[in-house]
Image (cartoon, rainbow, N blue to C red):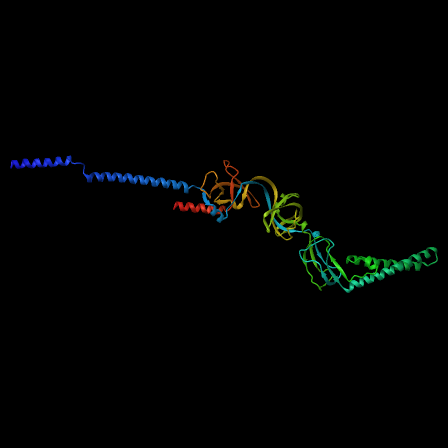
Length: 418
């Protein structure tokens, strides 16, 4: 029994020594190394992912920046323009119409009734003062000329009789009664002849030729001013009564502004002030005028005063009746300005978009940057802006499509956040 115990102890000791001398357990070593490598590998992969993500954030998440390709710019219709200075003023806003002074427009009517024999013009024709617009004919026209001829011939006889009786009266041969009767007939007939001659002249008939025996069957209707024919209100064969309107002619080269100035602004308006205005037919063209006169009577509804201003209309494109919006310049200053649609507002802050040329971009790609600005005078569609002092002034500003860029920027920020 003692020997058996000794052998058992020896075997157990050998087994334990064998286990300690054997190389590290393959299973135990692999588990430890695998776990360590796995953690290190995961750490590397995670580190790479973070670096890429950080790079993505830096490129795509830059605040206030929008990147567009040239094709996108053309599609959305963006327009840019170099920032420039303009003369801006503290202006008085006014509205009104283009009008003509009474002496620059004419409604043409005949002095004598008659039927229209011919019409020489159509609406829109340019005419000169004294030019014939139409001819009227009527039997009374012929009768007047005949009466003039008869009275004129009678006047020749009465003049001779008056002169002869005056000589006889002066010599005491003829009675005073005969001289006075001859004198009375001569004077009354002279008056009749002069009156008929004046009527013929008003009708446009040459009295001297009528005296020589000529008779005109029609009278000319002429224009008293040069200008353009606005209206033709008769047709061939129409009977036109005396003082009935046949034509309207206007001289648009002397067109002027008739503006309404409200009571609070009246003290600010002076003769000679400059006016800048636009018309609906040319909304992008700024026209100029100068205050000519200021009315002295208020309109009650609305309570306003009329102000008349002279304008230059040599090309004749401005027409009476056109509605105008204008500004009377009370004072001017020079400053950087952009069109109203170039300003984007977010709350109380105003922004503009500029082309960012400081950094290189991919080919066919343009970088736009949003810049905060403060605004000043608003004058005829332009807004004064004050840009950060550290910025260069030779910058390209987005003048059309600023709100589209703002929408694209917000859209990009939302997608990135998601």
